[in-house]
Image (cartoon, rainbow, N blue to C red; front, side, top):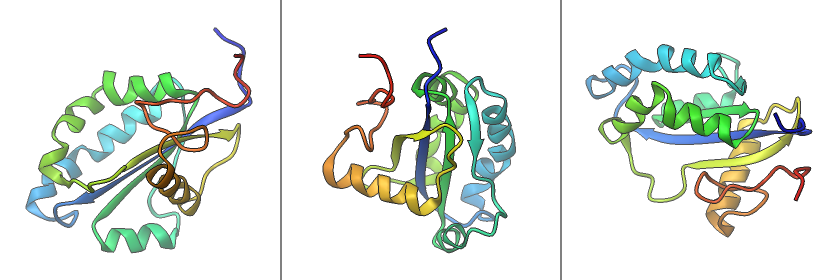
Length: 154
């Protein structure tokens, strides 16, 4: 077990649904949400996720546009990667084209936050814009080009 970092990994995933949450095309996805969120909550390395109904006006506005936002914090890249690709989440991920339109640009961004920090939707979208504008770097990256925590030993 490596030394504990003073940082945790934040992640934002943005997806445009092919219909409203109560539309037939989204039925299977909506039916899986609670189970998938439960898997995340119980996953090793999971720290926090933004939950609906927290009065976040940005989320409400995005919902009207059928945009789904997942914002969470994890212990490290490996923990998030295991959840995304090695858990029951994978079966939903494999069907994403049935439910979501391609955005044609980066829709996922990862970045490091100090332990205990809970990113806002606005902060997360700023990181996504940075990734889209400048490509992956220490301030905003993806699974393909991960960056170590700022305090990681070289």
